[in-house]
Image (cartoon, rainbow, N blue to C red):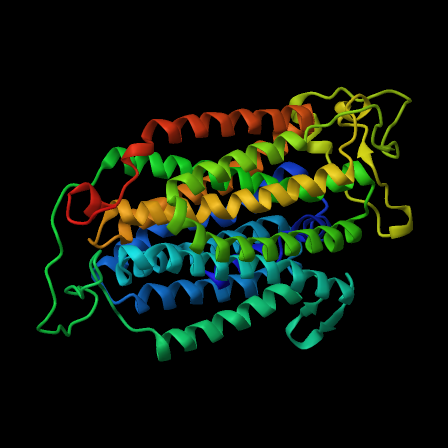
Length: 473
């Protein structure tokens, strides 16, 4: 989980400026697909690795998936080398990193099978804390590597450039190799039922004489589908928030590319620290008020966070006029605003245009989002998202019961990956065409519908053993 989150977050702030640097034909709409390719790869791989882990030792899919991520990170470090089509090499590299991250389904399945109901929430929270730590250290590493600068140093013998864009992925490749070594030397198979009694383990040939058989019963498929939808929306909302942070701050506060990488990296790192604190608190709160109540509370906090982010007042952002020609405002059709968004500045950084591009017509009449608004919103989303995230897949694992969960966890991970695909595409298009007021209003409406769905299935989101009367809730 840690490696997967680091692999995603360690380059999220620098993908856009790096894409501009290696391929001048890349536009903002292609940026959305580059970011989404990680999740597309993960969505394809998750059910495959999940099914693999149901019938074979879990070490196998874990090692193979991490090896793919290591190779993909090395490819990312060389996307500047080809003479043309560099943006497609970056797209492939990020897609393969995501494919390797499909092992999240295996990890969640392992945890669900190795813990009792009483241990489940705490274990899932610890796992999420490791994931959040990855999201913390990813931007921190990126921020530190920003000090290297865009030029960096070049190892001519192997044509390797080590700069603020490639150093993070090289670190990710090293961490992947380290993770493979840890899996080979430490990981062992273990499986218990909901009460904590050891069960027969299909992933391991040896079996003890005191093992019990897995309880039989039907899984509540309505609860399964509803939880997948809830998880999709939660990941969708956070993915779009991550994606919009850099362009929003560049538009509203006239930050340069390097400033955006540095400051936004610091903000996301702070949110990661906040998330770890929330995960630790969740372990205590869940015992008092339950997972369902925490999930509902987290969604309400997320709604407040995006409501706060709506633009108000009479102050407008600085307009970026440099690309305006013939003293007229361009025709801002839906396709054209995507293509002209965030055009690449020239090599001279002192002449880099900053502010809200006039090609986005809404810049002329939409009030700016004040920095205090943005920071308050980020804090609220940083509280609501980790609460919803860990509660949703903790409830999911309990609904499924003690049977092997690899495939089901694969589908849950795939739904989250689909959210990470659609979230960046949705926000980049709506934000570019209609601005932050429409974009965040639609998100608020989406959260209200999600809360309504949760209310409709609230009573069904109970553990498998509780539903079948084997354990009291």
